[in-house]
Length: 502
Image (cartoon, rainbow, N blue to C red; front, side, top):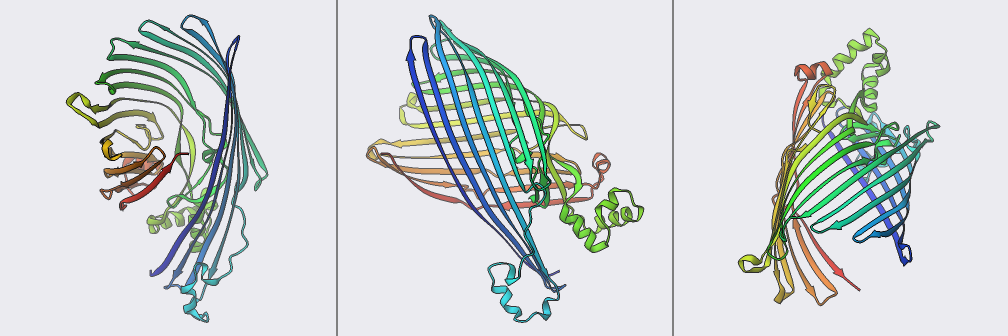
């Protein structure tokens, strides 16, 4: 089949934030007040046109997306010294986040292309080849609002006793989420609250050595993309996505134990081990349902519907099985965000950041970081790591100051291990190439700095291996339906930035 396809996405984003802070000391301690407001507006339009020369057909789609996020936050905290080297802090935090979503889509199709007049002119149009789109309409959930109101109460006590510094606190967080889908005239709500205790201790063993330990419970709220009711075509490759309005927050109990050693005047070497016991892990999952466009193609080509297949109609099921074999390269599913279940993640981190003054190189600094990670969660097949988590990540680099010339330059090299994702009927292994970044900057006086940055200088690649299956049983039995390899390359990126302080 010979086709000509173009796909263009225009993006315009505007964001700003305003914040203010007020503090006052009085007879009962110090009171601090913070007020903030932030806004983010994301406008996008995307079209895709395709000419099928074999069937003499032109078809196209266009979508408009407008998402407006606003956030208002307010915090009051008060600090009192209750004894020598011991203080207590308490307060309240309020945040209101809102999102307005407006999505509209339209399409056109013209058959019998060879009989059209002025055929050549259609190849010179910027898009849609001069044809009229059908009436634009919103997909399911395409017009919606989300509001999240959060009120937290917190208290913290901290103190110092010789080489020991400690703190212990608790936070009570309450959240009220409301989702309104104007396209289906449906509303959803989700309320939850958590007690979040924490404790931390620091022990200065010597002037150069320090041990730290901490334990805490944390909560990760679902982001608005994951709870939006909008049905998005082709959001994950060819696969569609819609949010889960019943998604629960992810919580974890964590423990950290660290050791730091000072090198020279300002250098530090550190080791930290960590463990997280995670509940209601949030991940993107395959629902097993077939994508809307894939079902439309099935109906156009065969004359039967996916609903007939789902209902168990024998003729439809047989026809659909054959269609899956014939269209293996074009199968697309519907994804959503789900609470996979409970799991754990643990690892160790090594950090080094130091000038080389202890060997006489006062103006040269080096840094390095290595993280070794592992995790475990149970899905529809069995135990696996968290999706898209690498076994290791490291970066190394240096910075060289040239004080006589008011200049500096440096480089960073970064690499990470393979990331594996296991979904229903599909497994993906992603390998990333190494990244090298350099910078050179020069200052003029105390006000102006010019900085040049070159990144991805090794033409990093992204290599993906896809293992695809027809059913969950086939995936368990390793009965492959399709094996696919994809590679993407990106060239270097150069930036020149100026900073002026006034």
